[in-house]
Image (tube, rainbow, N blue to C red):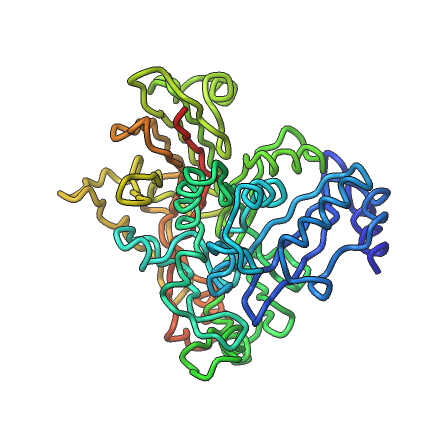
Length: 461
């Protein structure tokens, strides 16, 4: 069976036109807690066929998976990495403070995890994993596609699990681990993917084919009512159904060519970003000596690499008195919605523990922030009765030159960019209109699609 899978990948791989990676999913699920990883090969069939993939029947421990990956690389001379996903359904195991075997995290663990797991799938159908409103109460956009009602097992969700399930919290805790261990176990870039089991890439709201074939587009109530999680817990309130699914996401890669090698290398260096299904473009560079005039340079990207670092990289010690400066560009999906705003999300260490702040750095429609620095909403043109919207609000392109005026060179920090679109109809709204059925009461008619870039890290020298 494995050789048939690798043969299919080889058949469809067309360097320069269409890249088909060889890979498999390792579905660790101890006690129903989601610990799934997708393993992505840099190599072709000749190397991949030399070792049969490991499965969760062999082990459910990620450290044993890494051992298998190390053996593959040593035996074949090939390369691979794993992408964890669905941490929001892990009941606190995905970014835990102990290993699956119950041991405290060590520097060796941190180094191995980042060697074999440089990326995290931050958004997919079974919920968005960037942030949670309980963990980020000052972030009005943190409650997006939130799935926080347990996993696939009998253990109910409790609040203490949440910091170990969401990417922003893990990134902040990783800074603290680096200060303690000298290595950061949660220093990951981010991508999005569907996690669909249909063989279809359908992350668009108006073309959402669902999680599995059973819930592909239909007016049958099963499309909304099929239970996804909560089956094994005693409380029906723990259930999440397919109507709660989000049509997400997409992995975007800044690579020099469309080949396995170039795309894999770009992912390993974390020069990637995630979207919730939209195909908007985002680029960000950080440096010490950028200036606002750099935003209009004809060699914007070349200068960004020469004088700074891209998403996913480390910004090393700068000149005394200097602060990180970011150059950010965002362009709407050509077939999609205008942009609402660009935000910079900063996390840092302090004597009081890990901190975070979200900065609005560019926005549409000449809005003014209030006394607390918050912008008013961009508006909402969605008509739920017709599942339509207009680009009468927002902007097709936004850019920002941003300097961290609160920078403390003694504090570890990271910066990533979040770009929000104007509200558009949710997939359930499109279904409601197309099939002539009622919109589920548990979901909103509209939503704001978004993109998340991989962080850029600063470490004191």
